[in-house]
Image (cartoon, one colour):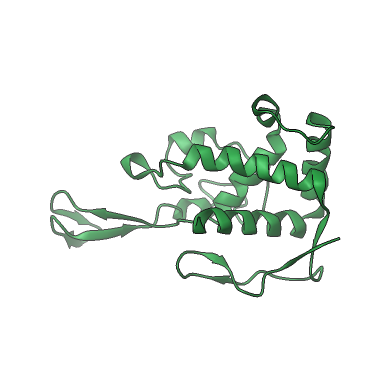
Length: 183
């Protein structure tokens, strides 16, 4: 529940911080579901909204680390890791590297993540056998949630220049000062 709440909070922040993206997503939802009702098939047509979800997960991953146990002893950059040692792997570091994502500091919902997923440089839900079982479901539900939200309410940040503060316990999440207003 925490990671879903954090993802939704970060998505709201990103939407409200980028009025052009909010307008694009709102228009898309209005075109795909003019009556405000989303079907599973219509969710697939919400490509900008899906881009919002994926980009939010790139910039604000709810689970940036994965805990593993070394199955065998190995050396990594001069450090010995013994079999049985618990290791924290920062799976989302590549999300912010320009060799993997052009202009990584820019929030851009038009990125193509297909190759990045295959190459495991886009890993908001970890990688390999450690991938969260709810990853796909989380993405679909997030698209649906944003779609329903933008079709039914108008929101704004408490001030146009508000900058999100992030705390890290129990996972990366907006600080207690994050609030939105229903207009």
